[in-house]
Length: 440
Image (cartoon, one colour):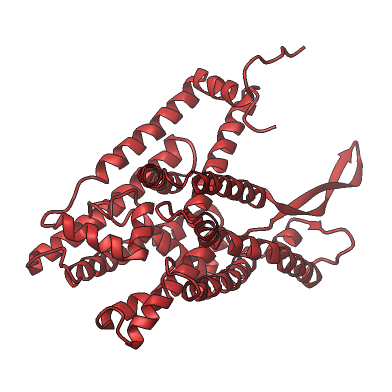
């Protein structure tokens, strides 16, 4: 008979995890890699004007958001300024191009060997993307109103770009070490570490400057916690499609046909946070282009108007235009990316090759049409959920009137998603050893 636990389930599960030598080693290895990442994030490139760089990030919303994801590495303009985002960009490009290019599609259908080839191509693609991104960042900072760099020669430019590429590749290597020897998905853990590191400074300064808005701060915390609950619910939400497999059983000299039943979980939010990345990039792009053609402040200049409209921190009613466009783009990209991913999986074809079928649905085209119908319906819930989470920063700011704390939708999605994924992996490790895990 199992003894009654005297400690909370979460605390007991953590104690059990540290009692297991191999699991304890994995957890400590992951924490050690994160510490190394934080040291790297504070190794700056030479020749940077710190005051000019801080002023640039105060005026540029997009780069301030990217700086939070890098855990301050971009604000320091360290060798890890770009983080692992060139690799994420390369992965997105490969995901979108695989269904379009027949050769890549054939490689993807080769099983484990095909996935390894796709991953190798993604790694090679990361290098030029990191190089172009690094060159773009340096050029943008050099041409800012208060130049961050002074008199960069050609050799210095090449050295800085190579350093940024090396920093990105090194972080990818650290992430893969976590995947192999630690706990969780390494690349996600690296991004998670950068976001959480940025939260401490943001919330600390927000509470220090907003002590006169105690009611607003409490309301802000309640909204943040409610958003986390919503993200957890929709991250785990899925529609179960019943599936049966015909199998052959031999008893003596006789052969019998039996039916084995299971289900296929179709996630409500198949697209993850990719629609938010696409939508935010497109929404901030007009304002970024307009910033190069702006006239004096408050002058009747078309570029000034565009810049003011496409700023997430713009005051009402002008700021409402940005968030409406952002909401609609998130919904559109959620459907687009979900359909791309779903078509690439070819679930109906895989099911037919494995001898499975959905009860009441004919195999082949009819099953494919059925899956498309179901995924298009549940994607409405996922798309509206993502769009609602995307505008949470705007709603929280208008409801609470707290300006110093900026709640990031993408940051919360990444933090909650990585936390759930890591807990599930630890849960599986504990369950295999007959320990009770984190989740009931």
